[in-house]
Length: 308
Image (tube, rainbow, N blue to C red; front, side):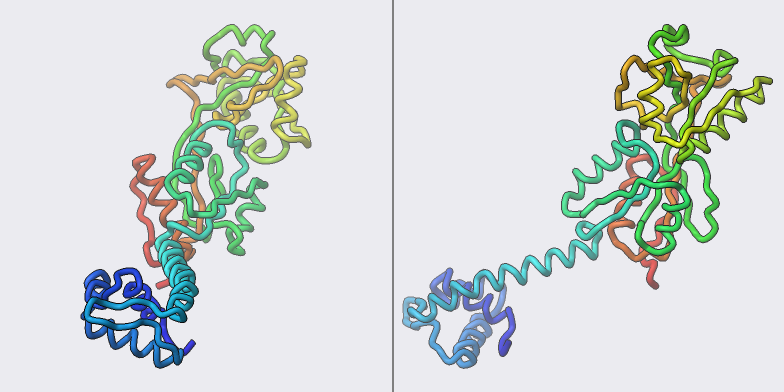
């Protein structure tokens, strides 16, 4: 293109204001600069765009056609600049979150909804998979951040605690414990627990065995090659109990109720952490981390220029 967008912008302003003087004031440039740029544009395209007079300027017939075609070009350039700037500031672009937790309730769901509302121009996507798959996704750059329960081997990753959620027992509505508002670990003596073999099932199994063994109880835990949703759908038939995190309690299943599990000091909690690479240069990731840091009043540091 033998001219730049600035010349088009000056010509459009002149057409809109009917005056080089008014157009220059609107754009914050000298009148002589705008007049020279319009004249240069006319020389480049070989057509007179404006008729000049003492009262101002008016577009010629050819000039009107030219201005009409120039408007979407300038608007497109402005949009491109705005989108690029927003992406550089983390207000646009894309963000990929990895998780294996349910989004039916809890802090992860609230965080995702809050982020979407505050950053509607960021293309937020998620991957739900096993812990190992998510960490592998971090390694190859397919995932920007993974949010996992408990603790994972994080050599090479940045790990920061984000929030904690209550641990609950899901049980048939006909079970005697369903009549209580809360359930203690000692109340679960002799119960059969069904857990998914997929994450976060192993993490919950480890917590369950640890808690019950401290109380001198031998846990009856059976791992199944199915989803947590499948297990919850079967509990109403009295096949056993299962342990879930608060994020799973937004969905309802036939004849199944949730009751908070309490330990000696109060409600049983499980922590969630974020894992990411500090050298990830995605501005949307840094903005997301700032969002979480503010939302949950956290104090970790965020690398602002990971590429440097």
